[in-house]
Length: 510
Image (cartoon, rainbow, N blue to C red; front, side, top):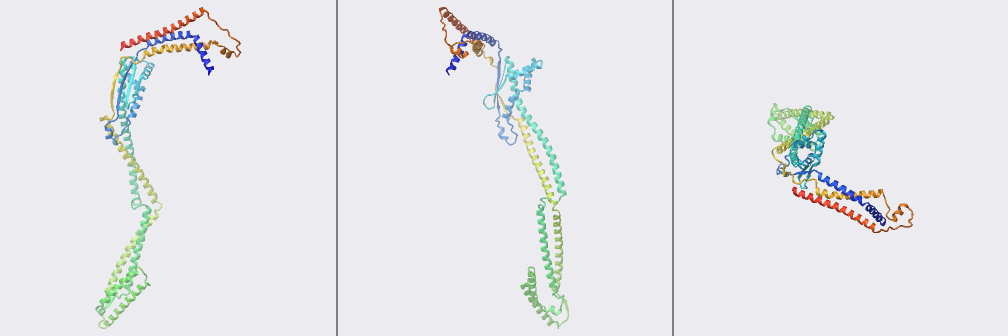
């Protein structure tokens, strides 16, 4: 640490030995700097503040009915677009700045200078922006700010309307495309239904359900036919046991009580035969009882037959004959129904490889049709929203631009700040002088103490000769210090005079 301090102290001493470089360079830089400051042209700054009100009362009322653009994002984009080349060219035409640029090089320089002096800043509050521009001509600066303000308002509103118009055009084109797709899908679906009528899902269920239903119908028809055939066969058996004719005496002597009992037992026998065979005990018992009653009836008829030999038609035989004819007709009808059900079942069975393919194709057509229809309805709804949004943009103010401060130019120039520059000039001169003195000390190095000499040579120092000053040398040294101080004082005094004059000029201009 002590070594570093000694090195720094040595550098300071070396710079101090060349202190006249500091004074001379400071004077030269200060004089040149002050002259440059006074030769600078004044630039006046025109500024305006605009507030963008995006909290319109229509927004909550139109929520869900219109397309709500991101106004804040659009405003931020416009603040960047304002410094683009097309906008700068438009500003130059509006302020007649383009008349001074006669060559492409002059036009580029003019636009670059214009872009570098335009400042668009956010004041820190929401949607409050400041537009400023500096120029040596205050009226021109004001015109530039007014042009930027006009472009800022018009471009923001015009871009929103242009976006809505582009969206409407795109939606109309998409609607036409989906209308064509929807019509084509509708035509294909209609032709497919006509070609595969009766084989589509929803027309009696799917293939498996149709096949199961047809099989159930065949089984039910077979059961019904068997029941009808059994009933007819029973009627035929009864007819075989009944005489077609009766004697007149038997007819006259017919016992109504026996006939009623036989008819009742015959009905019970028919019911049992529908469920059991002829070997069932109850069936055998009823048959024996019927035979016993029939025998009793014949015996009574035989006793009466001696009185007359005339014959008459048996009414029971006639009834059974009619019932058998009706049963035959019923059996024929059931056979025809069974044949039809079997034919349908066979057709479904033969189409086992066709119906699933038809069903898959139908589902695919329905799916495409549903997608096209949903997209068409969505686009139609968005078209209505775009139309309402366009009406809102053209007939109402969803975004309100309020100019808080119109373009104005202060009386005092915004640049340069001469008092500050005048104060910085001598400081820069002194720093430049110190840098020159340090550079000279490094170029023409001197040894100020024994330690430095020992470090530079690497040899031991045996001794040192002390310099003694007489009165004359001390006076010369004092005169040198006084002269150096007078030079510094003159620099500071000159700085004070120049700064005072500048302040007086600025106060007089204000």
